[in-house]
Image (cartoon, rainbow, N blue to C red; front, side):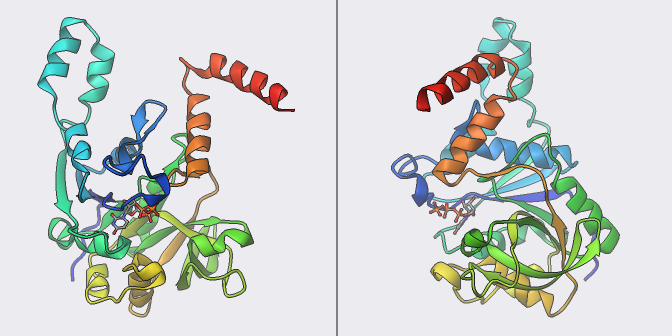
Amino acid sequence: MPIAKKVTKAVFPAAGLGTRFLPATKASPKEMLPIVDKPQIEYAVDEALACGITEYVIITGKNKRAIEDHFDFVYELDDNLSRKGKDQVLASINRFSAYNFAYIRQGRPLGLGHAVLCAKPFVKDEPFAVILSDDVIHPDDELMKPMIEIYEKRQAPVLALMEVPQEDVSKYGIASAEPEGDGLFRITNLIEKPSPKDAPSNLAVIGRYVLTPDIFEHLEGLQPGAGGEIQLTDGIRSLLARRPVYGCLFRGHRYDAGDKLGFLKATTELALRDPSLRDAYREYLIGLSSRLK
Ligand code: UTP
């Protein structure tokens, strides 16, 4: 199958139930939980935008309509902000209007592998990025860009890898991988959520992927794996038998915002980066830490 060289499409799986955030996620999407003043999904879309990606598909499900509304044009808001001369806010909320957004519904949240498979009619025969919005990457750190560069050089799928403490390996897909230098790895095997004693390494697959369309053949007909879900990791492991797959080691800051503590850490760090909050928030944290002693 001929593969286009440029990655212009991104898939954002957002159909999960977000059970770790109940009751907040009972009727509202987890992906819309704001970190400071921006929903998680917008950080993810901004990351793709910064890599030159122009077409976006969000995999949605029940109770996820707010995501569609968020990326839509809002006449009342546009009119109100224009009249008040709030040009900066206006430019910020309208910055997605030049791009194509598509929404595909995953009827039942059968797992991340199934959510990615739902994107097949949109992706067609092109390479594509997958971004999990609850894995928040600090905006000062780059991950997707170097991954796309590796894809363009190698014409092969690329996964994002991060070293995690041994006791945390059971939360992730873990890779066996051979280093090729400069943070590049050739993946030799993948195991979803292994126990620490069965983990082949502490290299965890985190929520950024550059995939080629042949992944779909490996997701079709895949049986549920760890946690009873159709796992993307299992599909990629099957692909490994047919072609090289690479890993790109990330050494920057990443927050698991699908988890309460990770969400709070992301909120704190990104608030400290916001010029309008930084000083007052820092002062508050210093006061708080001395009160906690
Ligand atoms: P998670 O496992 O982190 O999310 O999936 P979850 O299932 O929503 O949350 P918990 O574990 O119950 O708290 C990672 C990403 O994959 C999407 C989620 O929306 C999230 O962005 N996902 C997961 C789907 O789109 N469909 C699924 O069937 C499962």
